[in-house]
Length: 319
Image 1: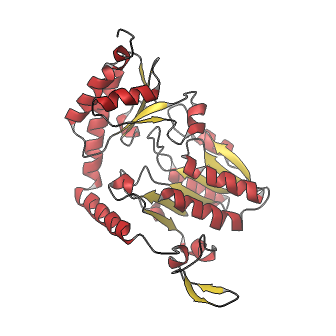
Image 2 (image 1 turned 135 degrees about the vertical axis):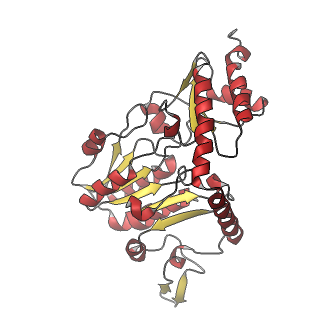
């Protein structure tokens, strides 16, 4: 999955390439899986962790980029799409600025792969990871892309069976990539399931996925805007959410919001969404996230809005 992929990069590339004084640039909106590995790498190598901040709507401005990059920047870790705000980050621009400084770019695409067609060469990134379960595949399977020359230089992350060419009493010759990074028994069932999910998604087409998401996201945002005491995080534009609608309700904890919606058959996520530094930066302790995909219906959006409109009343506010 994405978490293991990002840890693989941090342990294998990060620990072997980073040194004291180097800077790791991480965006403030990262999922913990693209933050904690770099905290670890910084602690072990003496590298310095710096943060790329965003505007309140999640947009990363050119001014923020220029302030964050330095001549010591050696690695940039950034989400393609925020799992809280749903905004798409300017990966091409970030990659170009990184290349000018000889830095590598690591992209967490867990939230973008189901929604946006991805061309790693066109983006100009060095590593990119995503998970199967976000795009209708099985849990426990994911994809890691890396530039061949970087992967060939990196030591293995895990050692054991299936990742060797030969073993002696004193050492081993590792298998070529990708096998060097696939120790042990592979998740064959997961790989097959992921392949089928990708084939199905391609048969639907990203244009159709995008059209449906925009239609449903626009309805959800417009409906929430009409409900008093409800506040949506991020942009007001439906095309800047990638199907993610995160919101708060005045006077009601997100866990209570989630429980009330759940009782009405609406599945949402509540808490800090594994992005605690972002919520602290936005001065929002926690929030509720509704995730919209192309298989959802207008009727389901209406049911969600009807339930959301009654949350404060059910909590005793008389509204």
